[in-house]
Length: 258
Image (cartoon, rainbow, N blue to C red):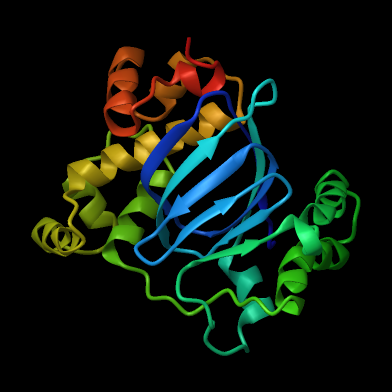
């Protein structure tokens, strides 16, 4: 069944997250604070009440900016490809110059979509057809605003490798195993990943760190458990790798740095 995934995101300290890969179409409803987004073609800042729409396959740099006493809060909503195709599949190419759309709080008031979305997800008794239609309403609303989310995209070797690791980041992945899962030789996979500028070790590390970031922002589980579930042998290894990549300690995602 088509389904969406909802991620309540909180963050206590300003931080910049570079080269984040979004495999699915994502909507970020900003409830407190601000989010700055950079791509090779765009430089956007969303504020409280705004909505940022990311097309599937986006590679972006994000900076979340908390506000005093309220932190940064947003609701992230990921839509499966098939649901996006059902809404946008017959439409032409987008007019925008990059993969991100910004819908302002005024005049469009995108946060008005959240009660219907949450009520639908909280009601398992809804018939399947009604549930599916209601979950598509944010996409239908965006289409009525004149926005377009592309649905035709070729899956790259990088996205295939990342999708496989994302399904089980705690597994002790080896390059030869991943290549076999993708029905290619290790040499072919390394050559194809090299064209994206990333070797297998970097792809594995980044995928695990980004999963860890998501869990830090969307759950209250112990950091030690998050580290192990994402494939790090020790919490200190996770913390060191996280700080090297993002310039912030994992615990500072949840508690403002002093």
